[in-house]
Image (cartoon, rainbow, N blue to C red; front, side):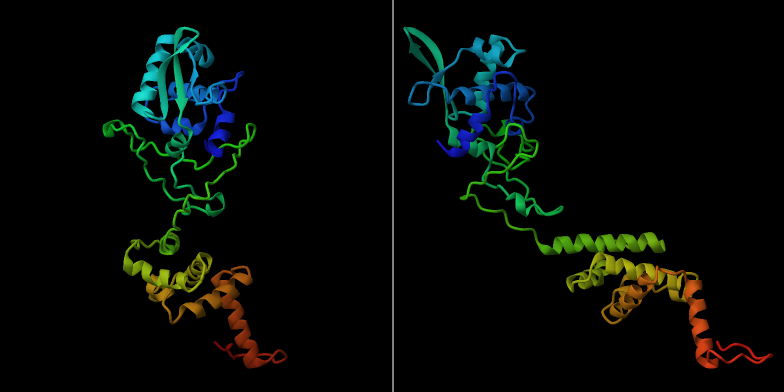
Length: 314
């Protein structure tokens, strides 16, 4: 029996509370009796480690299980056990009638390794690799071993690739089987495309445009992101050129992806945008006034007054 199963076993069947591990409920998802099935399985896993028999078998009466999980009758437990052993976990939860002191009693045996395989499919992703939005691989649906395809619920997938190692911790730690392969990392182009869509959305919001998420609209944005520029860099250029060209229809027609993010002009646009941001993003009229004042100082000099009747240089 595996060490992982022993850990799961140690968590099951607490006497003073009815605890159903979340992976059990994930496994039975779609069944209207999911919680009752989870509670039965929880108790069977717990008692499988308490028997004096050395072959893994233990006996448990239906009335005892009903008393332990509460809220169900002995007959309901009998039907739940039958469903568990024949539909959901055949050959994993084994059942047999055996003699105990001359009386037949229902015995059970849990195939711990097989139970782990169906509860925690071998597609675990290390917790350290869960980065931002796109680094958790989707679980691969597993054959639950029921032999009845129509009873399988395709949405029943383990949503947390974790095993619980602390009774009292909400942040459960993960124990990985070193033999489990790490899921391949997603294509970096996926993240680049997502970021390009963020930039294009910002352009549409700022300029009132309606550029679609097409190859033509995104290709220059993606190219700049591949070169190492950030989403903020591209959005900053958008903000600068909106401030610079707003109110001038001849210039504002260039508020488009191929102009803003083309390979020839983007770097110079970004340098201007960085200077603009470092000055607090002044409004156009403010820095145009500063530019004209600088030109006037350059022509007349700081100590030269403009003679009466002369107009300032433009």
